[in-house]
Length: 313
Ligand code: CP
Image (cartoon, rainbow, N blue to C red; front, side, top):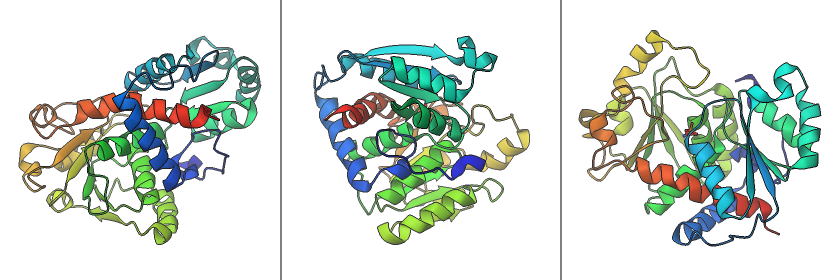
């Protein structure tokens, strides 16, 4: 979490939700809602524009939804695996970024360090979108806020519980919720709490927005009365497998027994990919409370909305 203190960037980029106001987030969510109803909207917005996707880590949803979304907006998408680039042989990020800026109109990056996406944004001069780093996954959180809005639940009285590992997804969800002035409950082990830097940042903005982060170490208490229960994998990409961590988090598995503590109409979210029978059972993932497939679809609409926001006007 060393890179967590992200510097301010102007809004030509989307590196972290820290850089976006509640008004901007809600504007993008409103655009996503329109784009979900009509996929032909803004279909020439990116005509003549080339946007590259530079991925250091695996991806299914992020890659596909950006590629489809850029195409639906009339743009051209170029997928780059870092394996084949000269950066792999030592060309610096700064030199690479300067080149990218001469050829491209935008760049979606999935990588390890947050400082890498910041360096690309600084040295390329083009729009850079964070497609996931070890610290943040802002596209996922933005899309999840849209999913909650689309389900009619994005309101002050929402009880939203995130369960399990505190990672890049929970970091971005906490920031998004705090920006919108909404409470978020985190059900986690005391050994794997949210990073102190994230809690401090959110405490700073929560005083203004009025939102709270509620930490619960007991899963039943965390889920009690929840309108939405959300989880993610317990071992993130790039992290070493740990039997100890999995055992520690096992009581936070979303299963029917735990879900009985939530609201009878509870919705279940998972950013996917899921490890079935680990952080969530198949019975729940495929069951009546699950909205994970809508959630996955909404990556397309939310990211198209983000592109419209970044490239309009
Ligand atoms: N949720 C998510 O980012 O999925 P991918 O890793 O498949 O892109």
